[in-house]
Length: 89
Image 1 (cartoon, one colour):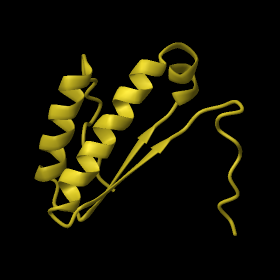
Image 2 (cartoon, rainbow, N blue to C red; image 1 turned 30 degrees about the vertical axis):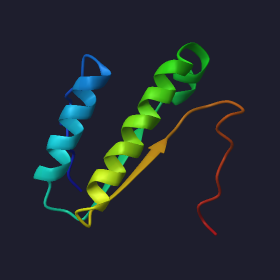
Image 3 (cartoon, rainbow, N blue to C red; image 1 turned 135 degrees about the vertical axis):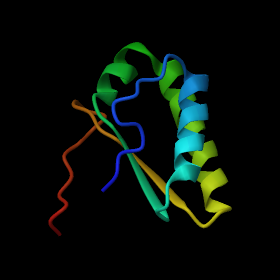
């Protein structure tokens, strides 16, 4: 497993998009997984930011797919918007 950002925190959505795109294409793997935790806080206080984030992830997955790279994002959180998932079956 390799981390794309190694602790990098973007200052705004455009920087996230730019850095994600650059790092994804520098990556030598054909599959990329992006995990974002505490998403419940964004849903509680920043729905517009959540929509922007999903736009960025959708755009990125389409860009990478054209180059035979699979990009999958997991948005994790607590509360009713994030029910428990049984991954054992």
